[in-house]
Amino acid sequence: MQKKILMLLVLLIVVTFIGLNSEIFTMIWNSDLESVITILTENLLLTFVVTFVLMIIQNSFTVIPLILLLTINVTIFGFAFGYLWSWLTSVVASGTIFYAARHWFQSLILRKMGTDWQESVKDHGFMYVFTGRIFPFIPTSLINLAAGVSSVTFKDFLMATALGNLIYFFFLSLIPYGLLSVEMNQYTLIALGFLLLTFFLLYKRFKKKKNLSLFKKNR
Image 1 (cartoon, one colour):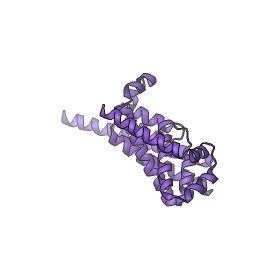
Image 2 (cartoon, one colour):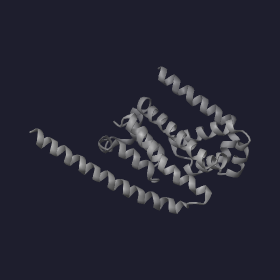
Image 3 (cartoon, one colour):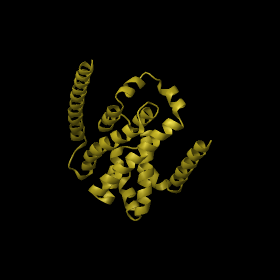
């Protein structure tokens, strides 16, 4: 009962905040970045709250492109702080949705998603989340929800999210400065993904051989 009350309280606060600042959120929905940045630049406290709420929404439903959020952050705060603030809020928001999925909506999500995918997530929890973070083809919200109702530990989820977003957000943050195009970003991430996948497969093979040798030694 207490968890449901807390959930409703959080939702009420977020909805109330969005309602009080509906003009800004409407501009963001319409991708009117110039007007949004002009308004937010005049109030940094409002900027912190708005961008954090936007990151929670993005991690819940993925209706707002990440590049849009990072463009707002790096334009107002500069590259370094905008990148780090985007990364920090993404980790917190992902962790929040993960917790909500696991403790509040698990039965509902499992009914919608089924259970066929759970075995692969169970065996490769960290890499499932990490790969999902660096490849832009999987919606952020889907990763959070699937991991939340799986057997992935919160520690592995948080570490994989923090590391994956640290890499992915760095490349996204370069796009508003014209240092990287969206097409180049995709190719770079694909190359990086294959490199990491190769490293992971080599690591698993090495670990398997090591366990096998220990097993033979102990016989």
